[in-house]
Length: 165
Image (tube, rainbow, N blue to C red; front, side):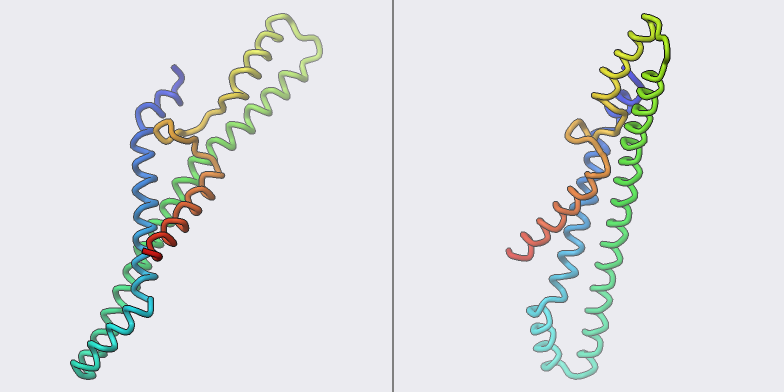
């Protein structure tokens, strides 16, 4: 068993849970931010403030903006963390594919290959081209640069679903 497969077996489930946790946090925090900026929360705040006076109205506005800023800040922190994780682990996959192509190109450039060289070329082309080195999230998916787009589509889809509820 190669080192990368062993690492994926050990840390893959943890990585899958971490990415799922980050996606859920980003969804919820941006949902809370959008929901608190919505028209329904503004009407409730205005009605409460009309009953309680101007001092409490100003205090309520300050608390509301603090809450929105807190949700936005936390959402950005989780989003940046998700970006760093997915880009860093996706770069491993891309560099592995680049390295495999370079090795295959240099193996094919051998002028007078020996039979052992031909076997080495075949083994490399069959083994590494089909399964490049990459991190897997619990065996569910391989983390590549495209995973970033998938996670953004999941986040926007669930935010829309939560806003419609």
